[in-house]
Image 1 (cartoon, one colour):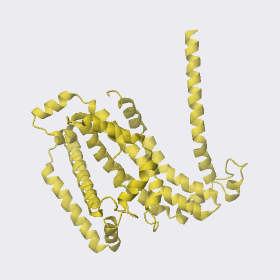
Image 2 (cartoon, helix red, strand yellow):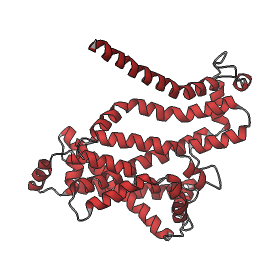
Image 3 (spheres, one colour):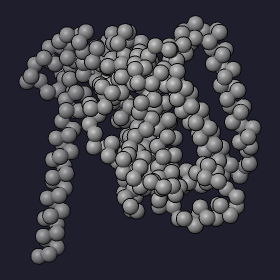
Image 4 (cartoon, one colour):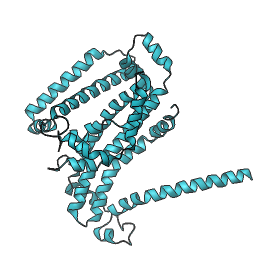
Length: 352
């Protein structure tokens, strides 16, 4: 009887999970189905599946909506945001987990409190900041340069450490980091003098007026995230304290311990935060919609899709084709990184 009851409960749980998954998939299946329909089939509420697959809908949507430009913008903003968020949040999580400072727990509680504040509440004050009404634009541009430099230093250090561990080499960071910065500076200078569009882009990104209609405004405000800081803190707290004590005996400081030991041991956390950051940034709509006002040159895919639906009127089949184009990249990434996400989610709460 006990085995029968257990099997009945298991069937019940799986039935509920299957029903929930089915309900969640219905909008996605409907979107893909309508994207292959003709206009007549799309507006007919009785038609659930297309009579034939019309792949030309995707070509029409791609050409009419300038999706190539929107895709470039989304990829640029999303990748840069994810890379910067990994650096900023991992450093904050490491500090909260392993660096003993007065008031550390109180500061961490304040960070967690921000999770309870709705995003819409922060939009108005954040908008005043990016207009230069709270801090001077020179300070904001200086902060941007500091964030860029910090991210480059951390990523170069981490990649060099992983390379040294993998191939048993000893590359010298004191030579690599200055070389990268010099090469980057020379490359940007060359672009500014040879390509007028690149020069205009660089000048617009660091304008003295405000951050409206720039890539910067869609990146810098979101490089810090309380939930990602919490995840990193939980992972770093799982590292044995003996590792840090042994590293100190070898003469390592916190920066060396972070880049050479802590990061390689917590790669699942980086994969999880990178995936979450990618999804959040890719799907962001309200903030890009509010900050990209003058032209469509900086619009990301979700905002570009909204503009496309308003331009196309009743052509629902093209709307759905555009929506499918917007969803596919993040869906593929999620499928590829799913095992890292599940592994990290199961380990993040082991140690409080």
